[in-house]
Image (cartoon, rainbow, N blue to C red):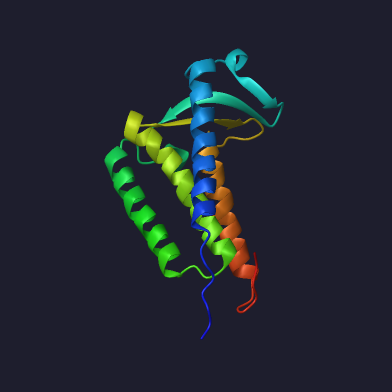
Length: 164
């Protein structure tokens, strides 16, 4: 009989809390220090020519689509959270990187969910300067990087090979 590896629940909770706290802290800082829809002079330059901080409100989802779906988005978050917790608890995600990607995506989704629940919109701040692109936030970065990593590792990992 093979013994199942114990899930690092405390580590998942800690990383989730750190992702959510960092996201919420940056959003709070932006709301206090950058005016809503700032002029170019009011934006904070991070990497000139590449990205700056702005202050935008997005009541939709990615790229501002589906505006005003606050309660539908929160319901979907609840379903997604239940699925991730179920997948973690039942061992459906068998590789360490699968579990960590799911945890990080969920934490990012919760970060944006907090905004939606409290305000009805998400605060976005990272604005790319060298091309037309959506303004996004730290939670979005965590969600997208973890999803991309999940896809890449799924495509390139071999069955039976343990990747951590």
